[in-house]
Amino acid sequence: MQWLSAHPEFPAVYVTDMSCQNDGDPLHYKVEFTYDLIKPEDRQAMPWNRSDKFAFSGGVTTAPAIVHYNDGFSSPKLIVNTAGDPLEGAERECAEWRISITGNRQAFPYSMAMNYINTVNSDSWSGFAPRTLKCQSISGQREVEQVNNAEVPYWTVSVELAYRAEGWALKLWDVGYNEIKSGSRQKILDKLKEPVSEPVALSNGVAKTPGQPPDMLTFKVYREAAFAGIFTQLPS
Image (cartoon, rainbow, N blue to C red; front, side, top):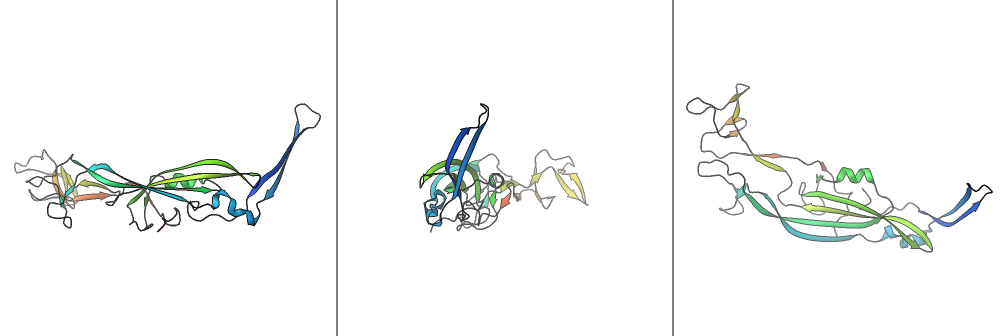
């Protein structure tokens, strides 16, 4: 998707004239097209040589409430009850920035666009840390414009990226009804040697001591791809 960073400089061809004549058969016509190359001095007038446009919008969205900052923002703590059990189902509002990039391009790369939708950045891009941006949408609309008395086709391409400071990984409590003992999966038993009726906090697959808070598991649920060199860098 280099179409959203560097403008291509290969020559463009456009139609300068067209003629249509009947060749004697009412079902056959002779159609002729005359083509010409865009002159170097005219290239700056081409739609795809115009600067890209950028837009920003901020808002809030909902996400699971997992940590709290009662002891200060430098030391977040897991949200658990006084017995150390996780409190599930709570939600919070989190900030989300939307970045829109729009530019004119000579062609629309369908396959590459489809590969980037719903992906997360694996690298740093325009000052944003890896795994904090997600490509939400890519769209293209074909346009035709008159340039120096010639019809020039091009594509208006738009990309929307979403930024979340906490990233896009899925986070879940490490709790369950089973644990790993002696290399095998076994049910966790209570004091009466009966299988537990509620999930128990785990640590590396082994049940924790009652009252200890659970750990958090982090999963990458979106495919990652490099954004640098693909999307136009934001202006400083």
